[in-house]
Length: 282
Image 1 (cartoon, rainbow, N blue to C red):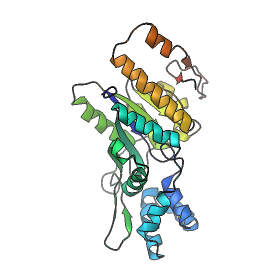
Image 2 (cartoon, helix red, strand yellow; image 1 turned 120 degrees about the vertical axis):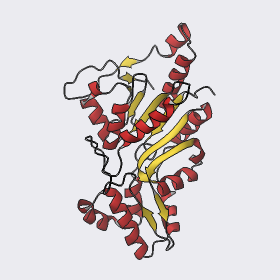
Image 3 (cartoon, rainbow, N blue to C red; image 1 turned 30 degrees about the vertical axis):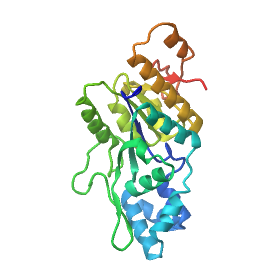
Image 4 (cartoon, rainbow, N blue to C red; image 1 turned 90 degrees about the horizontal axis):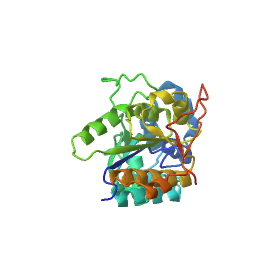
């Protein structure tokens, strides 16, 4: 298919969703006070397993959690963008610090589950008592990932990206990775991307700030986005650009398509001009 050489890797919370799914479930089920009380005492992944236990004790059923998950906010243009990328033949993958149950439920509700070839996230399942159990992607109590970047103890997304890159290197066709994320945990995978890849951080979110301050460490081209419309726009444009490059189209058509690209200054500690930072006009 046209874009079979494009691999799009997306974070989930505050990237595909316009909220944090953990906070959304806790808030909507009335457990915010306990969540905030326990948050300083344990990692978030462990806390979410504990919160599911407390909610189960209080009589919350799996059906209640599913109903809340189906109401999570997701911009219609993001749904459109995911379906567009899948239809063109892109290989779409999720890399998220949420959990399998939350992500599967939400993607299925919006008809997006079949668009993704992989969902890399914390494992979860409903036990025989009807309680949702949530576990860490990396068992940090036995085998800590040892990453020095701001990754949570239960998941280093940089390690996940390296595994994806290894699997891609085994195929004959060269693949280009587009990575979209917002949080601190999305900085480590941005450092793993190579020349010709694209890092698309959400503007004014933690990973954007880290990218601004450490732009020289990132080999990939960088383009920011802020909302659902821009998510759709930049993803569409870069898939198109990669496809054109693959087809070796030269001359006026390709030049015209990207003649409006401008170098964009991203605020950083040195306020320098980043020659590989692209702005896609809306």
